Image (tube, rainbow over all chains, first blue to last red; front, side, top):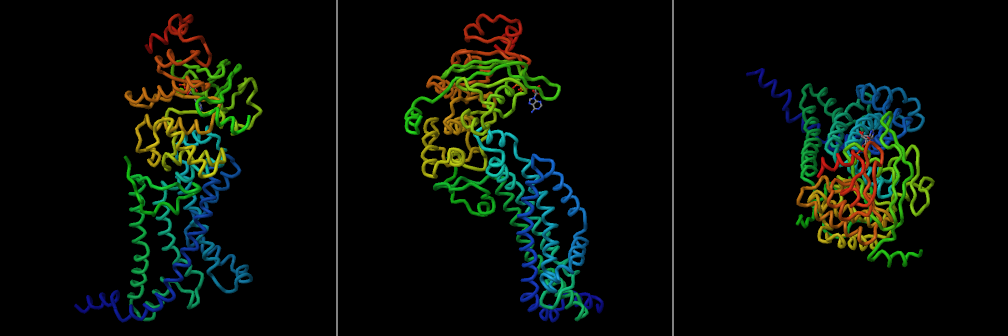
Length: 263
Length: 255
Ligand SMILES: Nc1ncnc2c1ncn2[C@@H]1O[C@H](COP(=O)(O)OP(=O)(O)O)[C@@H](O)[C@H]1O
Ligand SMILES: [Mg+2]
């Protein structure tokens, strides 16, 4: 009985949780969000470019894209983060001062780029070759056909995989802890970890875990929702079409269709 | 020709041109798919290309608009070689319709037409929409403007694809087995649209297995076998009095 109480106390000590909560909300959560959102943005943009290079007609673009992907997907995230965060810290110190965030974000972005690039590449390559032929037969140049027709279709298909990658990024953002964080720079994991060390129980770490789940579980369900929508095919929309068709992916997908249905 | 003149001429007929190919050769590696194909289609006339599967019909069509560059030979529009022209401009003037339609599945029908109108013909959004709706009306699908291609029947999709190609104001139209992917009951609608285009003076090259269409709607029929135009002539000649044994064999297989 005594042991059970101790075990319970190890994980569910409300006192420890309550003590850690303000730091989690004020410092940890914003920092985790900063790390993951900025890395997600950079990783998505660079991933797009990497995918374009990887599907290029030119060998001298495809080949470096392949090598990049192999390296950054093949290394454990923590190794990349330490190599970049510690290896470049001399330079970083001169440019940003003693802040591990820029290099941490750089490392997270480079990792995300490799995964997201691979996701986008597979999406682009899964588009029926007839789409390119059909576009070119209308008079589109190769690059216009890719940009306006092929890439938007390819990306739509892999949006669920892309969201999965964002989830991975939120979790991996905890690894910047290896670069050494000042009090105000700590993210969710580090705050939980510190509090756990101070109180001698793991409750604050459990609380950090709950914060991660609050961020990632809705995203997981969002993936399922997007996946479902893509499978069903979206309904047609009323009203005049937008002026530009370019890469409407991001803006269009989550919109609920104001549908006229199909007749 | 000014824009207005071209526009008024477009209303009922087309500003089509004559088409000729000269000694077209093409090999995929060791596979010599085209071995000197000649074709002559006068302005406003329709040529049908028939032949067994694998004889090079699709490949031949694609050399006409340079989706595939021929190894040797020339393509003439209005007597002028297309080989030293910009291929993208050329393809705008040579419309092509595919067996699998190749509509853009992620855009509704209206956008399928508007995208090339805006990007290639550089029309404003209003002009493009007007032109797109006009072309849809001509193929009888004005009410489908807001639908996704996937929600249309194969026959409707192919008519949209034809409207999209015509919206570029081509001078020549190529059809690669445009009805082969359709359910039998939908074939007729697409063929009659193609026959209408032919009557209205579009210059057309039609690869088809529909021998009825070839007989009725074409001015010249070419029998392609193993990359060679074995026999060509008016449909009555090709279907009723074929010279070569291979054509006779082919006709007895398909008819
Ligand atoms: N992209 C390609 N690469 C290699 N071989 C091809 C390609 N396209 C067609 N072929 C070959 O060329 C020959 C003719 O094909 P095709 O023109 O499609 O014939 P058809 O349309 O008359 O059925 C076939 O042997 C086919 O395998
Ligand atoms: Mg074919």
